[in-house]
Length: 187
Image (cartoon, rainbow, N blue to C red; front, side, top):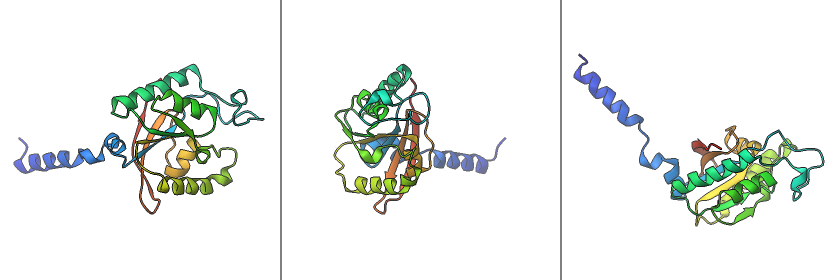
């Protein structure tokens, strides 16, 4: 029979291991203490074809049917967590803009700082710092969803997200970024 002390220690450990309500990434997003970095939904392949041009989706890697379904599922997931409207910003790549629109959380604003630097990795650190500066000055009136690319999310958080993965993120006044949660949505 376990000792009373062992029972007490096990119980205290279990209580200490439970995340507090304030540690809930969904609550932090609803309260606008966190934002979501969302990797665009499923777009088969890597990078973009030679000759890719912004604004011309025919020259880009685009969402598949599965990717469009995944983007809708992500929007449903956000709404099921009480996020009916959000400030949605997107990379100017078609796969990101399409993902953002299919969330159906409100108007989508293109934000060049979310554009992929996959083909220009030397721009990554400078672009990430510019994005952080922009984030530090924007008003926080709605939950914030940023739709972007794997390389951008990895550059900001060191997380390598899957297509359609939400990375719940906070940023302090000094620009230090913390990941407080991750969630994938199925197609």
